Length: 297
Image (cartoon, rainbow, N blue to C red; front, top):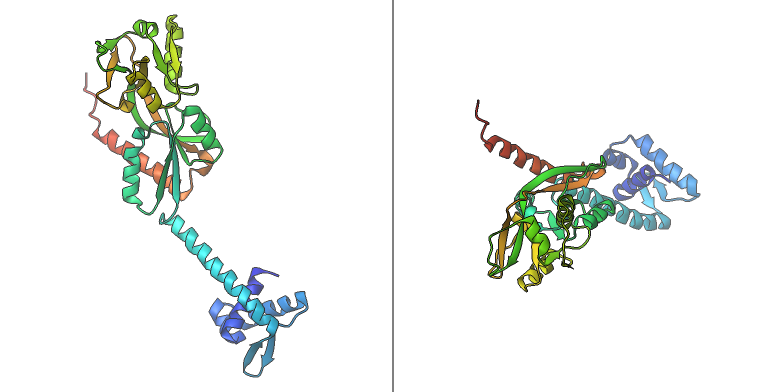
């Protein structure tokens, strides 16, 4: 039994005539007749009674018609669903980000251009987001370091520098790395790039943190700092100003934090994902045009 045979049967059953069925599906009458004959012979059944002015369904033919009605209705629904997805009129885009602030401007532009696409944001640190991306749990990850794997495609999102932050009333506006190491610290969990950068810089300078509170999640870390449990470190773009926290510039450390939009290379060609990547490319082209030329020497 083939799809073509069922389609030929369905057309004849609906039209009541081999000739009208042939016109409906765009085949010759002999081709339609051959499909129906092979379907009947393959199963040893009779689906039509041939009459002088057309055909009449047998009882089995009527029961089969009820099934093919549902089959071809479902086929039409499948085609409509896929067509809508191809035209970005339906679907959900899943994005994982440690800090949503980096990707929200891009998503706002995406929503304006493709309002029918649902957007879903989930959290996690760099390590957990990579695991979700590779496990197909999310479509994109917003990461604070550029992946080098050829299995991934990436686009730049934003750039800012690392700063420290302290409870209000701390009494300083700047901080050296030596001072930071000597103070109680509030650092994110293992897998956080911010924490790794701090620890790597401490190791490079021969410094060692004396008192570290490890806490999971950016919001929890900010609350711990506000409660006076230590000094935190965050990228400047992620620092949320409040009456309880103050930012501190590093006097002797200027570490840039870049955020990247990353997806699996094997999925980058999917319509929704390509649309978001194309939008980032457009934004990057606009930034390059706005960038002032270097002065001639």
